[in-house]
Length: 172
Image 1 (cartoon, rainbow, N blue to C red):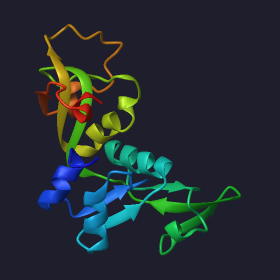
Image 2 (image 1 turned 180 degrees about the horizontal axis):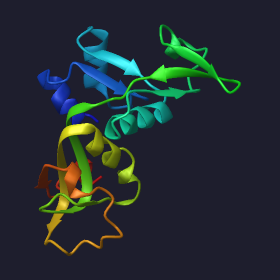
Image 3 (image 1 turned 90 degrees about the horizontal axis):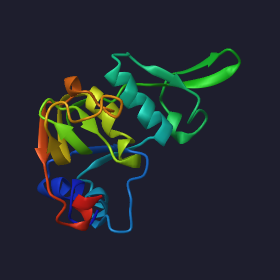
Image 4 (image 1 turned 120 degrees about the vertical axis):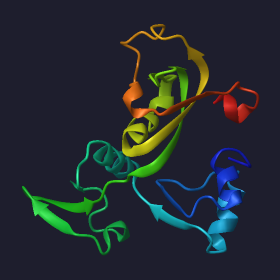
């Protein structure tokens, strides 16, 4: 958004490819400029496939077959199969060297609690990355997080950074 978050990384040239389901927001001028100049690669993926591919990486799967995208441009050049009367497209896992995720609270071991819909891609991305860095609003003492509310266990998180909500973007 604007000049914050991913846009800041894009401006520095730290990102060479974006894999997403929707690359454009009303204030995404940084991405737009880089994409139109041919300075960044874009892979469009339906949102369900995106989640499935990230989950596949986190679970150590080699690939998954999905019906979404079959017969469209998104399936062009990809392996397809007819299984039990339905057509599928082969999709490969999305694994990351680093995952930068945001959670509501965390402890020093990396156990994380998310606020409402903030738990959309963070937990699965933490599983699919070699190194996960979690930005949290608050670091709590060990044992303060209710185990029933921990969404991402610390085994998937290597670094926890507390950041005060000082801007509208940081507060999200």
